[in-house]
Amino acid sequence: MRAPYGSGPLAPAALAVRGAALLLALVALAHTLVHGIAEQGLALVFGLLVAAGELVRRGAAEEREPAPLAAAGALAYALLGDSAGRPTTHGALQVIAVVVVAQALAAVPRRACGRRTDADRAARRTLTVGFAAVCFQPLYASGQAERWFGDGPWFPLFPLTVLALTALCDAVLAALLVRSAARAEGPGALPPYGSVLVDEVRALTGTGVAIGATGVVTALGVAVAGPWAPAVLCGPLLLTQVSARRYTAVRTTCGQTMASLARATEIAGYTPPGHARRVAALAAAVGRELGLTGPRLTVLEHAALMHDIGQLSLLDPVADGATARLPAAEQRRIALLGGAVVRRTGAGPEVAAVVERQADPYREQPLAARIVRTVNAYDDLCGESVGGPLRALEQLRLGTGHDHQPQVVEALGRVLARGGLTQSGAG
Image (tube, rainbow, N blue to C red):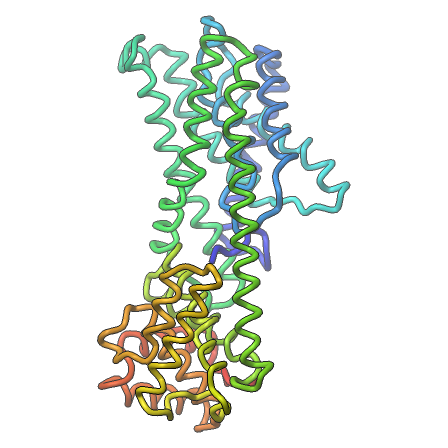
């Protein structure tokens, strides 16, 4: 699950990103004030586009880019070379200045309405747009881009190449900020930077492609048709944004349903209070330790939250919810019933498969099922007062020959050691 930007104390990486963005913004604003605004009409059109995109954004922390219209408009201005067939002269620093001012103006009504301003996202956009503008504007103005790509059908390869490099730059910055936010949550929540970067690059195949394509097409459209092109070309992205919001709302409802079902086992007395929540949080930390990111990590979290739902089929609760004491056939029946319930929640077949295979030998389980199995056993052992977390880990290590994968147990040990060995089953 993506860590929210701007939460908790700032890590050095987040401070560095904000500091670099602030310095770049001050330089761009000073340069623009001294030399004036070139092509004022174009600057106004793209400034309004970025500001409007920021105003219609929503504060969804789980979205990689909650303001795609603003991002596309900023990229289009950075990649703008001509307007209605005439070369532009605005330059890279004016691009940065216009984007910074547009973001600042859009933040005023948002703050007046009590909405939080996300400084990390604003800093990331400033640096990303600055990177695109610095790569594109000098090469275009000097004619070097035309000498490399020609002035025919191959020229669009130039902005597309800049766009690809900009996307990689944005992924690097986003991964730094996500990891900084995770560091603020505690050592046990810190994912490897490489895994986070892979997750961010994969996220580019979604809305990121639509944003980039809209930015390039808008810039090329203005080159032919003039300043009125953005009003037409950004319409499809706005419709995509609405569809994405509806999908996010459905996914949120599904998550709330799973959380309610997980609490049902606690309310009915089948599992200890907070057991599902603790197992889900610790399983996610172990999954990140083992390199799981993106959809695979989401599947693990949801399966860990729902792993005990099959116990509702029992006439009498098992003591402390520890089904490991039951016969293997009964464990298998409970797991299959749990998987059938999960399939009806809309959580997806991958989550149901993890729940269904909780009673399988660990060597036959997928990695997510092995993690849930081990973390669940750890929480059960802590709840049984076997002698504390260290003793619980020792018992898990003794069971690595048959019940638990050694790599998963050791990853659990590393996560607990970084976060401090605490009594997980304590409530």
